[in-house]
Figure 1 (spheres, rainbow, N blue to C red):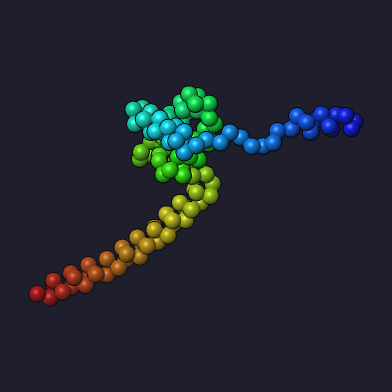
Figure 2: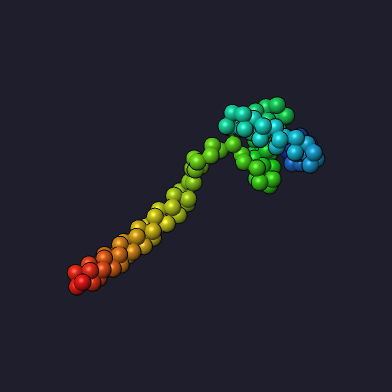
Length: 119
């Protein structure tokens, strides 16, 4: 039993991946932006295949640089359950505000009509 454990420990990786310089990262980000500009999306996947870097790493670099990750403009990404709950909450509060403003507007219109009729 002790021999198996020792062998497993010897095979265990250190957990440190390859480190990339800022110039290498910028080269990948530029490539992603170029592909996304030409095709609208797919730059991260294509860069991952070309440079042999994980899509997660490239996505993190894009987030840090402020560049777009390839989502199409005008199409919101899926927000997940928490995001949907937040959106529903915002919609509910906006609906209440709109209802309140409509009743205020109706009162103002009634007052306007009354004053107009008195002329």
